[in-house]
Length: 214
Image 1 (cartoon, rainbow, N blue to C red):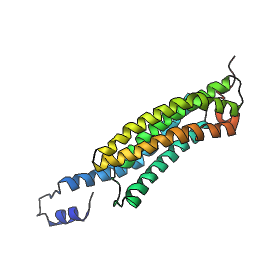
Image 2: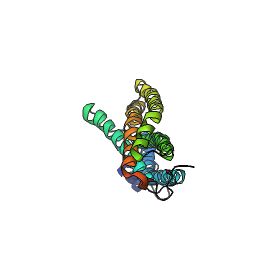
Image 3: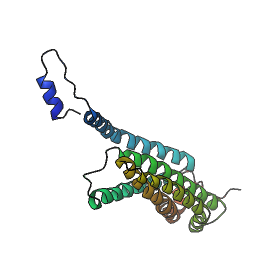
């Protein structure tokens, strides 16, 4: 980061000499710059790859859009809750700059896994000849307990980070725990099956993977 301190150091260096600013603050400043650049690259790149995987897996160009919307809403809700608790309630000046990328990677990865598990089961139920609403209900009935158990276990595991006493680990533990709960209980078990049931057969366009198998 070319901040005021580095500019002054560079301007004050004798001719033919190069001035360097070191130490922990400088390291974190460089990391912050790198992370800001990664936010503009990693986020859209990961989202595009996940959408392509969903499109190939489901043979649909419609379902991946609202599945990714569910993951994005889960990320936004997680980050927002963390900001409210640590900045507005606890009174911290801000969150460590690395936290959003950790939330994105964990919540996006786990949320996508849960969504795939749910919608794959929903497709199986549809292939049995059930209408979209019945297929969604059966999918929640059968896949829901597995997703719920996995979410509770992982959320509890990450929550243990709040006992570390380290600011980064405490904020990560708090952020990832509700993030996983939201991904499992809200997005996967409600946001994923509900639009699929409402959109119906069109959700599987153009592959129509919900057609009853012979």
